[in-house]
Image (tube, rainbow, N blue to C red; front, side, top):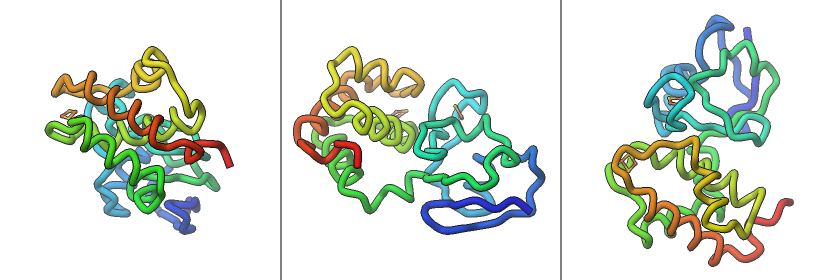
Length: 158
Ligand code: FES
Ligand code: FES
């Protein structure tokens, strides 16, 4: 039995320790905002926060997350930061098919929390682990820039 915190709630699972965190989140806990793209740590579609650090859940065996604090896109949806990113992605036209967007939003939140006023190069670096197959990078960069500009004070570390 492995116990951990998922979006603020203590949960447990009987899944084998080698099972992927991505599958656990989607199949057992039915949090389908976290997507599978490559399954190999290359695309960022499966991004979650593990103890506040951005991680690819397709690469994490659940045996490694006993006692950890996991947040998925569903877990951050009620935050002011998410609302600002949602609005900024929409205003900048950053969403095309939408498949990469939960991972992009997680990466954007991680970036802005660490660096509230990033340069364009820092933004591109911050999303370098996330692939958008619709080639919407310029609009995504604009969206993050917008969220940085509008979010004065919101991204400061608590
Ligand atoms: Fe995990 Fe692509 S599905 S990085
Ligand atoms: Fe389609 Fe990014 S919006 S993959």
